[in-house]
Image (cartoon, rainbow, N blue to C red; front, side):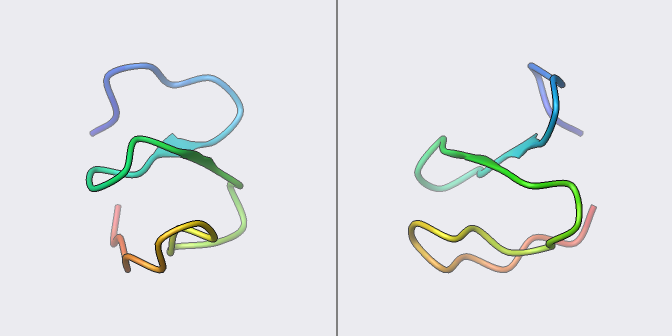
Length: 34
């Protein structure tokens, strides 16, 4: 689970916040299944 849960989840690879409606990071492309 995310440490800082605001509007989106935090990418475990680059730390970028991603939208709720996606399960991958738009910045580095890491697929996250939460």
